[in-house]
Length: 357
Ligand code: ATP
Ligand code: MG
Image 1 (cartoon, rainbow, N blue to C red):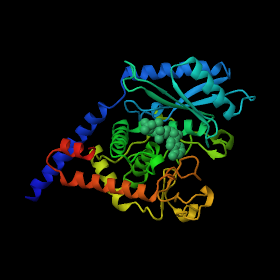
Image 2: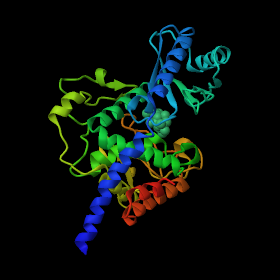
Image 3: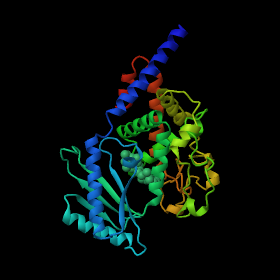
Image 4: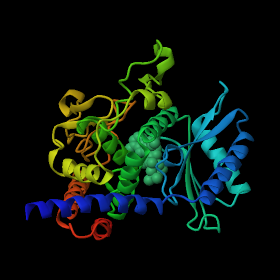
């Protein structure tokens, strides 16, 4: 009887892996969507150069790190290579006016936001049936680097890492726990939770720690630091593939089930900080205890319920927007997912549908 139960479970897990691949593949952006987005980037770059001739417009976030889903927004970063450049607030205002005059975008310049950006959106068209949403920021070089870091992690084990991340992005959006503005976690936060789990929780690890590997040649602080933060990581993925391989042979379904179990039961939310650079850290050591007094943020919301250290800006909690209620909901969803995957052993496809309903 017990052996039969085990066989059923093993078949469920194998089916679930296949269902996960099939599920995420149909949600990937089409080649046409990617081409339209690239055209949009080039058009915007050409227009920005009429204001700042020495500028480049680069993609970051999911469009650039391999974790893009159909109709993902576009995150763009404008880099200006000349020393004499306009202040970001002026540039945002001027660019907003220009784009309003010259394009069909709906334009919303936010020159006085903490990080000045221009928000754009485009109505649906045949190439983009759901339209497009895009944010243009300025000089955000750390975001370009963290995008590159996530892309390198995805490249080490594309099948397992990309499938897990893409599934969790869809799942968190469908379950409505992917809105920093409403007190839950950004996609970037979920991706960091996955990488933390694969580098530091799984034993043997699925991924190496790219930020702690020995460099191939001596490096200086000048080479590695950006805005005062150490942004070095081992990025020669071809070489890494030759020299490093994971002894972890778990399937994507096994990893996902364990991911939900770990974050519903084992992660020490009250005291711990998930750091992909260092492993599990203590809130106390980082000065990230729940801050009810206002503190740095000077408002009554609690900023450190969930703590995820940014890989480069190590004094920055990526999950600072997660509220008490938000974390309660997120943990509830992790528990629900762990339960659905452990108590629906008949059909993987039904479990997956229930998980995302
Ligand atoms: P989606 O497809 O849902 O837009 P994404 O992979 O683009 O997902 P986002 O959450 O939009 O992820 O993040 C895009 C980029 O913005 C990240 O690579 C990161 O550089 C930056 N970013 C987003 N959220 C945060 C945050 N809370 N703290 C710091 N940087 C963030
Ligand atoms: Mg994005």
